[in-house]
Image (tube, rainbow over all chains, first blue to last red; front, side, top):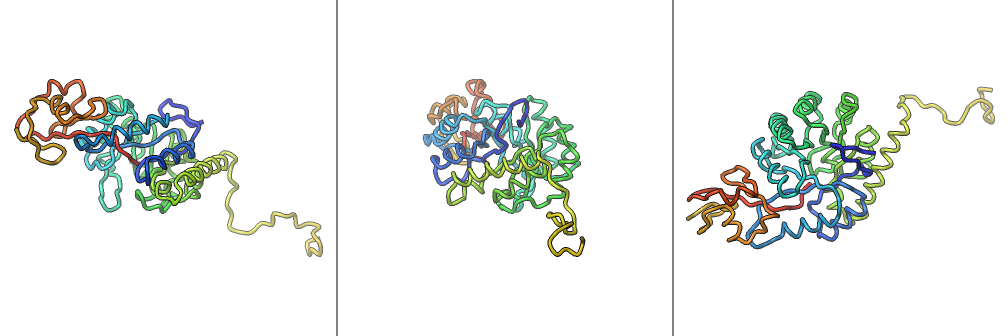
Length: 259
Length: 65
């Protein structure tokens, strides 16, 4: 079972709530995925629209854990302020910390991330930092008080899967006891399965489900891929080798030159 | 007085952040507020005065990834 900041979770799939064709399709996708954590955000609310109220009611009806993000923040100060507002509105200490350092790639700013993580952890937040797969950054974030890390697979919304499998594997090997979640860039169930086979504890998916022709079915597919990948990891993958090895015993085979 | 409300100019009679929320009919439990870039907790809205030119931001839950 997965444990994140003391909360036990059966599902290793976390789902974003943005970009669905309709609120109903979002609800269906969350239910079919089996996800027990969904990410949410805060945005400026126009007077009298109450759209935020309707969305929050829909999320509460799903009876899942809510992980607010600080999406769109480009400085530690903005991220800290957004986190404090999210804590008040969503009544949770959990925060998915995003401090974006480059607008084109939406690459996290490692310096702002560490600065904000320190401030937030000291203020009682339980921080899920969206980060690159950098080992030194991971170490600094852990020192700052993070007890979960969320390295990207690929830039947000690209659907390219795991761009740096070696880097992600090294992170896993370096920090065997830290819950690691691949966040961003996953485009297909096979990418999610791959992350789980590497020994990652969970994956966070949004666009790949929301933009699927059938979001609920894709959510189901991701749920199954995450389970399969995790089971494969726990079962122990065979070592890779460069030369062929016959799986059928050669000795005694019909007409075999080997006897 | 004239303030900046969520990035646009807004004329208001409200003298506190709480009164501004009431004037705009926001549900006080579902929004978060910031004044000049700093978070203002719900319980401090009533004692947070507004002055001409202040930047107020009001946030509500939204879809996120």
